[in-house]
Length: 294
Image: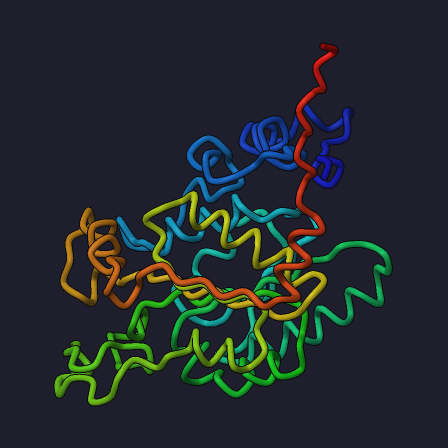
């Protein structure tokens, strides 16, 4: 990676806004060890956002951006929802798709980039909510997995429609009552991680964003596997604190309360044999102990 994409011409450096100068000087582009620890000091990792105060999605979004292994050559595809309010603030190429067709857009984009830039790594990452992923867009989500499209799908699972009043979604918990689902959910949470595995995804992970190290590892693995092996899927619990009646500072605890060993967001990870072999092939070789002269 390099900073060539955002470098300022010397003749115009003095007239550029101080914020852009700061972005160029301190951006994490070019850092081989960039990661979640850069959140809070790097301007391009969403210095400001338009989500609600304390929204777990803002935490998750920052971790995703910080952990992209190849941000300069990554295109993110979003969908209508709370995340679409954040994409205008990010320093990564992104496309806003219609509600639900994000995986179809990503399929064409990935193939086009492969033709336009042969021999160059171009990562495509889909990021959408549970409504776009499992309800409105389920057909296109599954079809991209069936076709073995080589990109990563990330679902920010709010367990309801967070930005339109709290309607029931397929990923809502059974029996949960929301403002626009007063009778309560009448069927179990759709087991999309299991469906992803059965639909051909080579890496599937379920987790919250309370542990940034875990998010970083899962995301990097998913993107690396998608480059060479096939589709990958990550489902992150990002509760809408507004719709579930929590205070601004309670989002982190809500996630922690949902990730115990027997809870619905206990960390789970699946990896196909092909994915395991690929990760092993690119893992840095372990240094052998030096032989003693004696």
